[in-house]
Length: 164
Image (cartoon, rainbow, N blue to C red):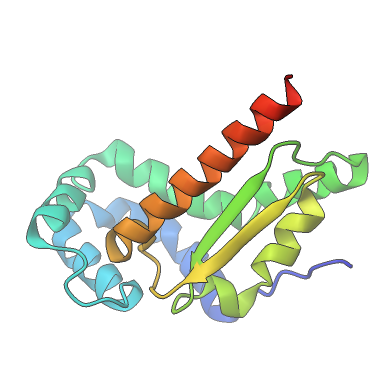
């Protein structure tokens, strides 16, 4: 089954806007971050004053802004080309994968996350949506920690059994 990527006009507009935004982002990182976090954070209070100050500090650095914008641009272009090349060459991810995403974010509604990753992997893929938005680590920190500890503990046990 081939999973199709759904890209809406608003996503394309945002990606195109990143070229303009990059040069102006550093002028008022606080405004940008508050605007973004208000839209993507679905758990009021999850991003506290200390966390927001750290985001502001990072987004006051032109290299951090550039890297963030490059990451978003790549998702709309070179990442897709590299995925296509891997698909054509039959290359698959060879390590177990645990996918987590926010149920209240945009990823789940746009993609069948597990089906997408299973197409790309030659090994087991597990995962689930968490009851949050985009900022999983801030909105559900304990749940993320539990998920990671369970995943890596299970992988360590599998590895030990395989190496016997």
